[in-house]
Image 1 (spheres, rainbow, N blue to C red):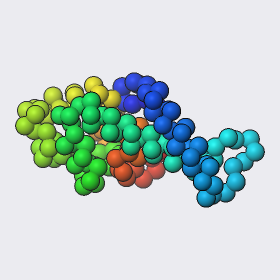
Image 2: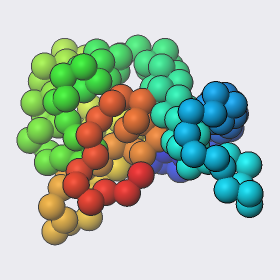
Image 3: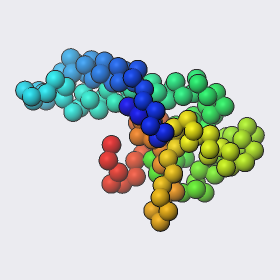
Image 4: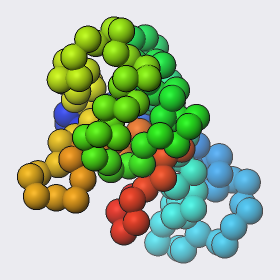
Amino acid sequence: MTDAADNTYPRSLTVLLNAAKEEELRGRHKPTPKDRLLSPRAMQAGLTEASRARVNELKNEYPDLKLFLEEIEHSNALRSQFKRDELRRVWEGTCKGIYPTFESFVKKIQDVGFLEEKKRGETYDYGIASLYIDGLGIRRVQGEKK
């Protein structure tokens, strides 16, 4: 349970395991293999719940980013990976008044572990840390692993 800045969130792991346990106890899926405590489906449910909790924590910790996070959560303005211009459009509509330069905004969301910069020559310029993707309901780019 780490973000793009390699910050670890033990509370998120607790949320993941509790939600996975609850999903497993509901028993609405195939029996868990004998060599596992939790099924992959239960773990996915736990991951989604931990991601939602972490997104809410991020909104509370950084209220200046709340409008930005809510915009991408509700409008599908970004996918899990995206070009610089796509991020710039969302910044202009949400945080330009708070972060007067695009560069200061990018630095902020990188510093809080939300955004990772891709290597030069890749298809996309930026990506959202996996920890936040499911909690925001963002679509993953085709072929991207969870």
